[in-house]
Length: 100
Image (cartoon, rainbow, N blue to C red; front, top):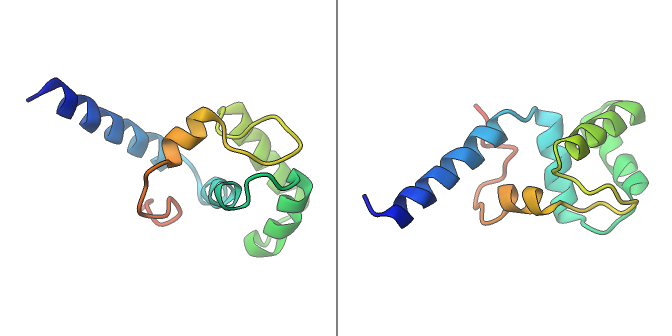
């Protein structure tokens, strides 16, 4: 197998393994962060409150966990980190649907 093909397959496999470890709430928040990049984090929380049917504090806790994993930035405006962009970049399928 050619080194470039092997590297691409390894990259795809690692992305899939990481994404499979995320729970549904984390996946939804990452998808929204990707779609609504640049809005205030507090506005994202309000947007997600009804969709996720959970408390503000639960959403904030999940955002903090995604920040701890270096998938979301530590700013007041929502944005994916380089790692978050790497994991979500180039995917044709929503990460929300990719978990069995």
